[in-house]
Amino acid sequence: MNRLSLATMASLPATVARPAYDPRSISIGTVHLGIGAFHRAHQALFTDGLLSRDPRWGICGVSLQTTTAREQLAPQDGLYTIALKSAAGVERRVVGALREVLFAGDQKDAVIARIAAPGTKIITLTVTEKGYCHDPATGRLNAAHPGIAHDLAHSGEPTTAPGWLVAGLRARMAAGAGAITVVCCDNLPHNGRVVAGIVGEFAARVEAGLAAWIAANVRFPGTMVDRIVPATTPADRAAFAADCGMTDEGLVVAEPFIQWVIEDDFAGGAGNRPRWEDTGAQLVADVAPFELMKLRMLNGSHSAMAYLGYLAGYDFIYQVSADPRFQRLVNGLWDESGATLPPLPGIDIGAYRRDLLARYQNAALPHKTWQIAMDGSQKLPQRLLHPARERLQADASIAHLALAVAGWMRYVGGVDERGAAIDVRDPLAAQFKAICANAGNADPDARVRGLLALAPIFGDDLPADPRFVEAVAGWHRKLARDGVQAVLNTHFA
Image 1 (cartoon, rainbow, N blue to C red):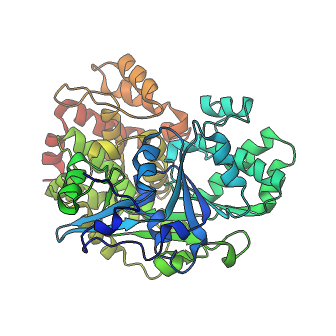
Image 2 (image 1 turned 45 degrees about the horizontal axis):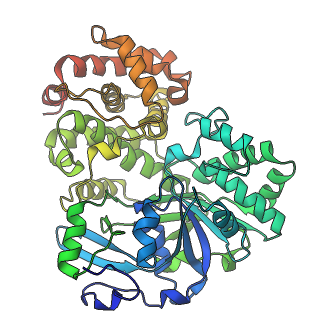
């Protein structure tokens, strides 16, 4: 069977939308670090819609970890299909914005050259929270991180996202290639400001004057991204092949909903950036209110459902969100987190909550609880712990937030309620395992004390606040003794 490519695209069924331009005519103006499914289903789609009018913004996608993206996409001339799945069916569209795919591991010089090229005006990133090698509690660069320590000692051989950014910007400074904008598209609070700080601190350790050049020539607008993009399955690829008569190894699937809010803070002004607002992005003066709403409402409830839902025996979020007991739990969580949000002009929080629940219940898009549960050490501070702090400062209840944290503590122990092993994926997984093994099972509070001592997650304040400690420990005792199903039946039936 043929594979999707420039030569075979014309053979696709008429129901599959195709680029309104010749991909071969597109030049590269954007470098993207972390060319995974989310970028292909989100930022690349916004860019794809404007290339017929402005061909300057083709994307060079860079994979930092594996050759998978290059193996999937290079034989397809960078083309791939996005399949939007809902109860109404599947809507497919071929995206042509990706004009080059590189693997940093063996194409270092090509990656650096792309960042340093005068025609490159934008660097975007989706490397997940852990990819910034920072301390989640403070937002600062973690200089002790093994990858950062390596990159600082071998500045010409970067392995981390901060290392690649600084190496590329250093080459750009040396080439006199001019100003550029770095657009973080990961779920970090104040992501633009945080990444600017990480890059600036790294650069200051590399070369005198580099941090000052970056401060003067590089802009880091804050952003908020939103779209549910589960992992593509063999069944998704098989359905495409059956319907379209060819294979697509780069296929991504997503929900119909999409949102991108970007601060209007670009190096060189509007002429030096894609007009993403023409394809549905929102350009705003301050992204913080949108970011906070998404982190605390969508991401916070996603994490709570992932940990507790997995332990309850659910494989997918649509199953969790269809359970009336989890609906009550999530609505209680939203009551607590929603009360910490600033005024949001033009936003109906009640409607937003209803829309979130409807999105979660999209059974056509099975999003694994295990997938969402990854990297909790990087996610808990902004999703659950920061709102808990603000609730405690207001002397308000944190019952539902504390239950979600207790669920995470049960999950990272690495054994589910049926005695089966959990594949815990987290930068701190080894520490979790040691803490939980040392605590044992006889005293559930010992695990709580051990995990709360992880300052990069909980800071120094929360472990010292008896209201927080007892709220989390109380739920943890119930979960350890009775299990999630019994806790749901007792408190949320």
